[in-house]
Amino acid sequence: MAVTAPAFETIAPPVKRRRRWTQDQVSLPRVLLRMLAGVVVLLVFILPYTIMFFGSVKTKAQIRSVDPTYFPTEWHWENYLTMWSTPETPLVQNLISTIVISVFATLLVLAVAMPAAYYTARFRFPGRMVFLFLVIVTQMLQPAVLTSGLFRQFVGLGLVDTWAAMILINAAFNLSFAVWIMHSFFAGVPKEIDEAAQIDGAGRLTVLFRIQLPLVWPGIVTAIVFTFVACWNEFAASLVILSTAGNQPLSVALTKFVGQYETSWHYVFGVSVVAIIPVVVLFMLIEKRLVGGLTAGSVK
Amino acid sequence: MSTTTETASTPTGAATGRPRSGAAPEGRRPRGRDLLHALPWIGPALILIFGVVLFPAVVMFVNSTRDISISGVDQGSVGFDNYLEVFSFPYFWPIFGRTIVWVVVVVAATVVISLGLAQLLNKAFPGRQLVRLAVIIPWAASVVMTTMVVYYGLEPYFGIINTFLVDIGLVDTPEGYGWTRNPDTAFAWSIVIAVFVSLPFTTYTILAGLQTVPGEVLEAAKMDGAGPVRTYWGVVLPQLRSALAVAVLINIINVFNSLPILKVMTGSIPGYDADTIMTMIFKYIQNQHKVDVASALSVVAFLIVIVIVAVYVRVVKPMKEV
Image (cartoon, rainbow over all chains, first blue to last red; front, side, top):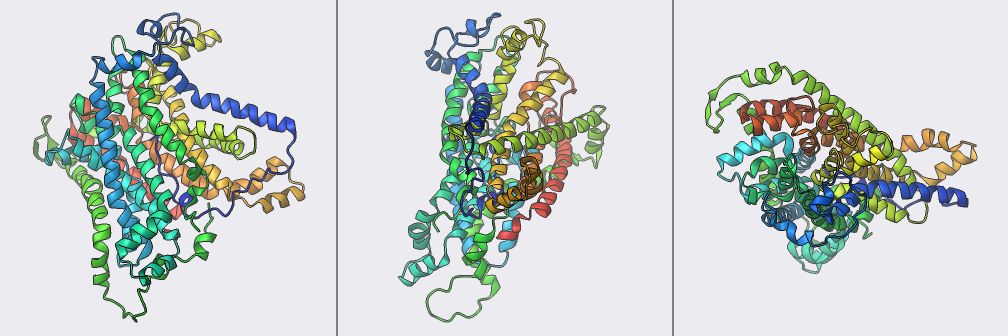
C-alpha cells in the first residue's frame, strides 16, 4: 500500500508549464503563516520516523523503561551492529532476501515491460487495445486479494517458499505500472526521430537502445524506482508464500516481534531505519516526476 | 488532469500507425502477421500477466468450490459449501460492515486532508521543497514498519505516544488505555495510520491536478470579485474532478486490499472484532489452514475489486489516450 501506482493521466501528458497561481505579491505575514503550516506538516510527517530513529539508539532497558524519555539520553550506535544477531529472526538473511527479491523482480520487470511499452507505443497491431486494457486492469489488482490462488498455484509448481516465487509475483503485479509509464514516455518521442534513424540504416533494436533509451530514461528510472520500492515493501504475498524464516523479507520478519514477551523494539527500529532510508532516497530522487505530471516526454 | 493538449498536438507512432520504413511503398500487411510481429515484444509481458495474475485468479475460483484438507490435498468438489461457510460465519456481516467503515472513513479523511495539504504545497513559501520531500516519506517507507512504530508508541507504560497522551492529560494513567489490546481502539488507530500512509499519493495526485488549473481563469475569478473560498469551490475544485476521481478510486482499492496495518495493530487480539474481509482471508489461510474457505472469501473480495475497477475504467477513462 505504500507504493501506489500514480494516476495514469498524471504520468502521460506533459504539463505545459508549472504555473503557480499565487506568484503575485504575497504579504509577509501570509508567507510566515504558510511557513508555519509547512513546519507543522513537516513535523507530523517525520514524527513516526523520528520516534523510530530515537528508539533505535536506546538500550532495551531505556526503550522499555516505565518512565520513558522522548529523546535518547545516550546514543547507542552499537545497536546498529548488534541488532543483526537478535534471536527472533535471522535478520541478515531477511535483508538479503529483501534485496535479492527486489533486485531480480525489478530486473525482470524492466526486461519484460520495456519491449512491450516500446512496441505498443510505436506500432499498431491487432489486439493492441486488448493488451493495453489488460495492462490497466491488472494494474488495479494486488497480490493480497489473489493470495490464496497464488499460494495454491505455487504449491502446485513446487515453488512455494522460494525466492523465485516472490520474484515472479512481484514482477507480475508491478509489470503493468511499468508498461504504462514507459508507454507514455515512448509515445512522447516524435516518431520522426525513429524514421530518421531507420533511414540512416539503423535496425529496430538499434533504434530502441541507441535512439529511444537516451530520450526516455526518466520514464525508465521512474518505473524502476516504483517497482523496486513496491517489491521492497511487499507484505501480503510474502507472508503466505514464504514460510521459512530465512527466506522472508524484512517486512514479514519484523512482524514477528509484535506480541513477543519482551520485544526488542530498539532492534526493530534499527532495522527499520536501515530498510527505510534507501527507498525514501530513491523516491525523493524522482519527486519531480511525481509532481510535474511525471513530466513525461520531457524531451520535447 | 485533462492535460491532453500536448498529446493531441504531437501525434505519436501509435496514433498514426506504424512508421513507414524507407521509401518503399508498403501494401497493407495481413493482420495476423502484424500480431505475430508484436508477439516477441509483448509476449513475455503476456506470459507474466496470464501466468501469475490471471491464472491464480482461476485457481482461486476453482479452489473455492473444492474441499482442500489442512495439509493441502484436494478432496473433491463441495459445490458452494465454502461460500456457505463464509456467509454463515456469525462474524461475517460485522466484518463486512467494518470493511465498509474502514474504506469509507479512511478514503474520505485522506481526500479531505490531502486537499488541504496540496493547497499548501502548491503555494510559494521558503522551504516548500523540504516539506514536499517530507510528505513522500510514508509513501516510500514500509507500511509494516510505520505501523510498528505506532504500535510500540501505544504500548502501556513505555510507549512514547501513550506517554505523550498522559503528559498532556488526555490519558489518566501511564498504564494507558490498552489501545492495542482493545479491538475498537486498535481499529481506530489503524484508521489513523491508514490515512497517514495514504496521504502522500493522494496529495501528489491532487497537486498534479492543481497544476492544470489555468492561471488566467483564477485571475478572471479574482477580477470578478470572487473571494478565495468562492474561487476554490467554483473554479479550482471542478478542475480537480479527474484528479479526485483517480485518487478516490485508487485509494478505495488500496485501502480495501490493505493488510499490514490491521495485521500488526489487531493481529494479536483474539476474536474477530477488528477484522476486515482482507484480514479474515489471511486468518482463514494462516490460522485455520482453510485455503478453500479463504478462496471463497477471496472470490467475494475479488468481485468487489473488479466492480471498483470497472467504475474506475468508466469514470477515469484511462484508455482514451492510448
